[in-house]
Image (cartoon, rainbow, N blue to C red):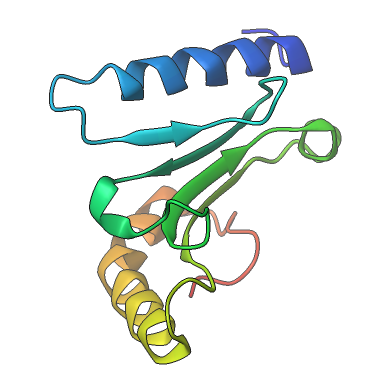
Length: 114
């Protein structure tokens, strides 16, 4: 794969289409207009209709291309009370930490986990 904005834009559009077309129809995807290498993904029960609930976000835009990094985040925004967000992120961090640490055996984690 060529590491160009056009290549990532196409890849993210294909991923969005694949997730929307899943057999169980359980993923909601949103992209910016015009579509770019940005994807906002949630499930119907995650109360994310206003883009302020629980969701996954991933993007490779110009800043990420220059830095050679990509952003992938699972987070809970202001549509949920603060105490729930803190509990949610604590539980997610606890449950995914071992897997993420396995991905980054060489200490390549950027930013804080949790």
